[in-house]
Structure formats: C-alpha cells, structure tokens
Amino acid sequence: MLQRLSTVLRRPMFWHGTHHHDSNDATKRLFDTVSSTVKGIQQINYVVEHDLKLTAEEKSKMKQFLIYRYDPADENDFPKYVSYYVDLKKIPPMYLDALLYIKDNYDSSLSLRRSCREGICGSCSMNCNGLHKLACIHAIDTDLTQPAYITPLGHMFVVKDLVVDMTNFYTQYKTIDPYLKRKTPKEGNKEYIQSVDDRKLLDGLYECVLCACCSTSCPSYWWHPDRYLGPAVLMQAYRWIVDSRDEYTDERLEKLAEDVKVEDCQNIGMCSFTCPKGLDPQKSMNHLMKLIEEYKERKIASATL
Image (cartoon, rainbow, N blue to C red; front, side, top):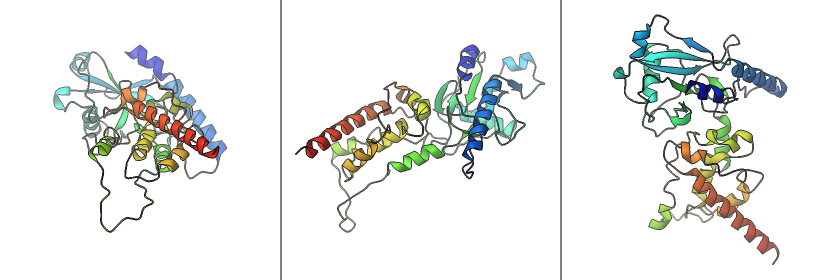
C-alpha cells in the first residue's frame, strides 16, 4: 500500500501553493506556485511522527493515520505526512470522526472543512486512501496493519492542510446559471407544475452536493480546469436543461457548446466511480453531449432553410 501510494503521490497530485486572488502580479504567482509544487513533490513522502513516546506495542493496538500537512503561507513549512495513532474503540467509524478526534485531542492546528456530518453539505471532501470521498460518510478501514492516508482533493490549490481553494470550481458552477429561468411571466402565486415522468428526470441529479470529488478525480479536468467545466458542473447544467419548468434550454445548450466546456470528456468514468453519493455523472454527460449534438444539427438545419 505504501509503495503504491508513494508512486502515485510523486506525481503532482495537488498544486501546492498560495493562491493569491488579490494580486495582479501573475508572473510572481506563477513562480510561487511552481516553486511550491516542486517543493511539494520533493518532500511528499516525508513522514513526521506526532507522538514520539508511543511504543511499538501501543502502536500495534491503534490505527495509524498519515495526514497531509502543509501551510503554503509559511515559507519555512513543507509538505509532509504527519503520523497520528488513534484507538478506534474511542471513536465512531468514519474518517471525519478520526480527524476531529485528532484535532480535539492531539493537534488543534490541523485544518479541514466540515459541517453537517451527514453527507449533505459536501464540505469534508478529501482523498481517503486514494479515493476522493466525503470523510463524514466514508468508513475507516479497521485493519490495524495498514495506515490510512488522508490528503487534500487532487489537483487543487492547497490553502492549508486538507483545505483546498474551491474558487474556480464555484465560479464555473455560477456560469451555468444554476436556477430556474423562465420567459413566460408568472401568473400570481401559481406553481410551475411537473408531471410525474418529468420530475423523475431530475432523480440522480438534484442530489449532488457539489463536493467536487468527481471533478477533481477527472483527468480531463486536470488537463483543462480553466476551460473544461468538469463532471460536477456539467451534471448540474444537464439538471436544468432537462427540467421541464425551465424555458432557456437552447440558450443553455448554446453556451455549453462553446470551446471545450463539454467536449473534453473522454468517458473515463472516474467521476461515477468516486462519487460519494452514488450518482452517475458520466451517464448524465453522455446524455448532455447527445443533446448538444442534436441542438447543433437543428441549428445547422434551420440556417440552411
């Protein structure tokens, strides 16, 4: 396990660097990011023991958690794993339970995001033993002979420890206009009624919690995060396109047809494999790409009339 993960982590799995949004010095930002990334790659397999007093016998009865720690704002800090040992009998079964126990009892400086603890808010997305998951609903492997690796979401700027910068992700989400858009004026307080079949089209779409586990697991998103919207955002775009109450279907399709917002999908399927909610972004994107192709054909046909 250690060797396999070490091999993976030698690649630039996360972008180590401080992401300064208020700076106009793009060149400095580039060099800072590259420098931090190189520094991260050089040190990624470095392990620091949190408690040097633990004996081998004590460790054998506890679970080892190797947690990625790094503060890009501290020029003296460097990326590393910090090793913590936890008695699994003292905590509930999820990764987030272990992290909060470590933060409350061992090291209050550990930084992470969390909120609902029920798999609803999407805050605690991170890499748990090689898979992007929600830490609050992903169970700890109870094999005490194997360490548990916890790292930030891949290919994202690290703000500190397990916290990544989600700005680009949420900015992309905003571009799809994720709300109902109508051309027909609403009549009083009358609701927009859907048939049972129309409502079923939204199942498997509206449940997305925007945790970004799928997008940050997608190689196409790694390659073009500036242009390709990624599976999470595209699945939500599809959700509004197939909503029978929305009246901007063609406008939405036209917007998505530009550049490589959609077409960079290579159908690798990591998005559906890693989704902690059990959704199928790959299937949604296939349907979306078909709708875009049909829209392009209709547009060409109408132009030739």
